[in-house]
Length: 376
Image 1: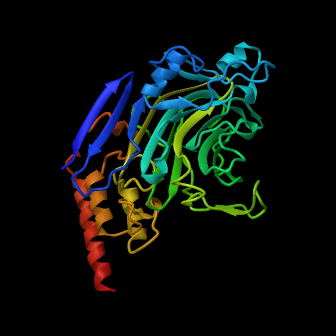
Image 2: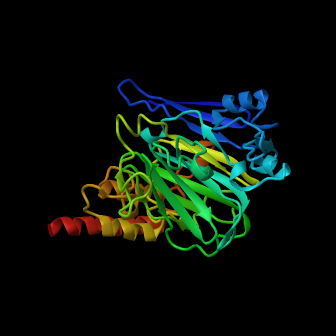
Image 3: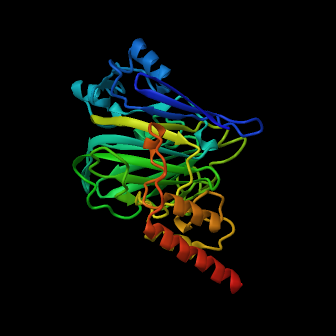
């Protein structure tokens, strides 16, 4: 039997599951914080203490550099966490204002999770980028060019929305791989957007997506990047420290190296409403559009029979690498819902009774399984 323990304060909500003897215990915790209830800035001991009590810290707590080349101060108000604001007030801008907020817990690579955060920024136009934002998992250090973990020896991955592109990145031992992915023409100029990363600890893969022009409520992906395999970093032409690397290594990678969840940017970008849900529930939302429907059933049908190495995009709902009848059952239970939303950390609702359409589709699926079994 599981017991759910909830504690609130300073806008933070922690969820811990106490498992029966013999069950596995995950160290990484579910966590939610609006980032709008803090005050002051990252240079102040009182602000640092409040942020730490909520489960976060900063890469840097420095203020304005003596030579005026940087000011990584993070400032808080009712809008959220401002990055680069103080440096702009000092007359500076760009990389010199970058800093990163991070979870204190540093072992998120050991468990599946869904993490989300809202950001407000002017990304600029294609060819003329302005503000930059980053959301990822790793050490969360301000590194070369102000990019998190760039050209370090740490394993890391992030998403970086840019004008016209939704770029993803992974790195291990200074082998840095950028992925431009498909063009996203609507991603430009000023706006408020919500980012999601869905990490699968079993397959060691991560899926980044974005809800553009976010106005609150459940996450609804407008664009989902291709699944990023984190087992290896492959860069045939050479990227920094070599051509091939691995993010997972007991002596030189995860889980030994830090796998915090981090976010940040520059030029007055604002972040708020962070949440992470560990031990992500099974999800039959195979196409990432935040709704389980007939389109997901077709994906499951095409993937049915894969016995190992399957991804969610192929119909694997429970993360075991296989596409089978168990995944169809999950689809039936979730039909018409938007599962795996990070909002589930603050609200638990009953799964609705399946509709007539769901039951009909389930019957079709069950018949299809029997027919496949009879012909093999």
